[in-house]
Length: 480
Image (cartoon, rainbow, N blue to C red; front, side, top):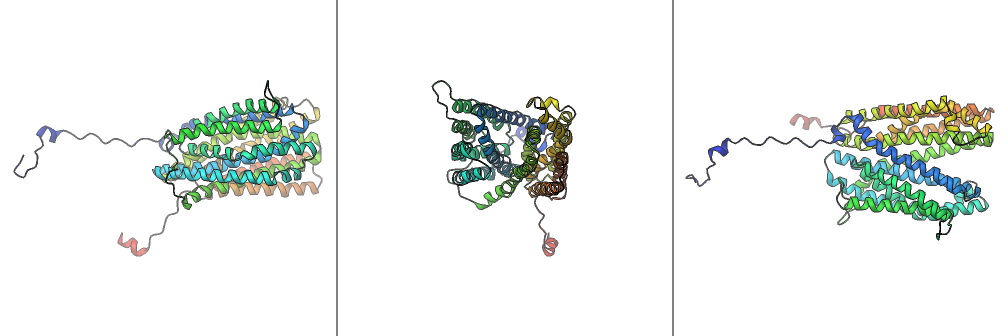
């Protein structure tokens, strides 16, 4: 001890160098190569969405065994089911992923966990709204869409079961959004894949009957979907609340905070208008084509199936941009966020466009899968040769939509979808008034795809991403 009572440090300890500072942990979504990271996040989504397409095909197959009336009933219900899934998954789920990714990009894990809890409340409330809305007004809506007799009865039976459990798909897609916001694409995609398998097995078994299990018809098909969703919810809830994810939703001691709701809804609620307008656009165009007869309508339907399959690829790439762009925005790396958007746009444009253009040149490869009717085949070839190459612009618009979700600036792509809806409506009315041919309507459809892609890109260019800079008063600036 020295005279001052302070312990002396040995000379060798004084001279021992301090350990070098540890570099901050790298975050692949913020620091990794954009293209490689994007593809790494996107490939599980591609597999999962392909499985979802298989569910649609399988359901069509075994519902067909229930009879023509069951197929017609499913056609009535299908738009509302698709609207539920796209709103809860791509729209509101994207808003959830965006808010959590921006919080994590800013390094605020506490905020991300609180956002996750508020997201679950939003999913619960929207699920209840869909449930009550369809149980109360569903039969009248299905009748308005043309349901009559036994077709309407079977459609109502499916609606009562599926929308009676509407909370389940909303909670499932909300939990998927939470995980995707943290950059975890593999678990939601793996569960989508397993859920698809369960839907096919359970829906077929309960719908058609097997062994001691009776045939429940359309009610059984709907119940099979809900059971599959419940299994996925159970796994994701265990994963999130056990602390295995980057965020743990706060339940105990949670205080409801309106800014948290706003942070999610300012993206998710606005984004919900995009699938709504998309379904409305397709419905209006289909109604216009119906005047040309069954063959033209069926030929268009075959082309629309290809559109659905290929835009799933763009969806897989687009949803991968949400956490990448969101974290970049949260970390104030705006230039990187925009590069992510454009690189994803090029990937979707090229991949979708290449495959669609190949089918446009050789349409029989696709058409032969669905029909042998000469008139329907001719209409399908005509539509695919005109519109299929323009599917690339749908892929581009999809990635701009999801990237804008990540940046919390989604109103531009939604307005682009509005412009397409008005273009189809006004253009279709003008063509009908002049007795146009089906080919001219196909040109209208392909032109609307170019319009949507161009306006979606323009919205990204002209919209300011990132928080607004606050002006500093002159007097205060002088002091600083």
